[in-house]
Length: 272
Ligand SMILES: [Zn+2]
Ligand SMILES: [Zn+2]
Image 1: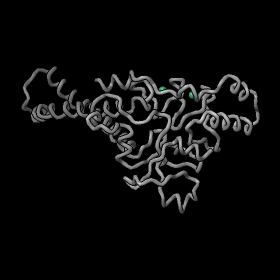
Image 2: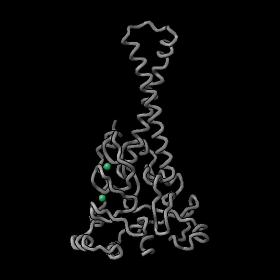
Image 3: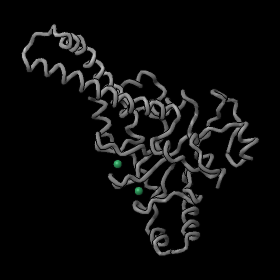
Image 4: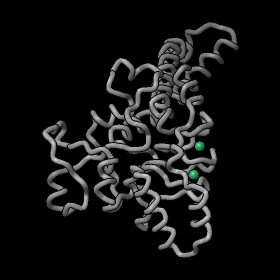
């Protein structure tokens, strides 16, 4: 219940004020009909404010939200239901009536896990009674029988649907993808890349659940980072042979999981 509460009532992660265009630039963007010109305005704004943005729109331009008038940080998307840009947007969930995002993703997975455990507990504790009922050994009033049947089928059906969602999100976490990214690969300066944030299973889980494993099961916020800049992997072999140095990389001695960490801020500085 605590996880459910945290999922619903955690404040939605929003871009910080530095991503929003100042009044004069809003005016400039609003009055230009030339896409190249508005692209240049945004490029200049990002460079001048040193915004850690590595993702791009499909045409290679900065991702810009016309409704919020802000440059979208990496992995941020506009939610039409909430009417705002949401950090590390996953999806808008009608069951919790809010956005699943950077601030509450851990709580959402916990909620699914605990809901599944509760459904399974109800299902298996009801099972002996259901079997007794099925074999005709169960002598009880009509209302009691209905409760047994109702509990057996409802917990069973909920367990199946919740487990699909739960394991799907565990899978997405292991790949460091949000639901929206699993359907539409994030685009970087070097092109779309579904595994653009995949740091290896251990690091991917740590990014969502934090480095303290005790907190993995408690509904306490422990995600790493700030929801704005995300570490990206660099594959030495790929960088050398395939990407032809289009993808930024640094040489470090830290080679856990054969992946080097690179803060997006540095990546941006090199790209611009
Ligand atoms: Zn927006
Ligand atoms: Zn929403």
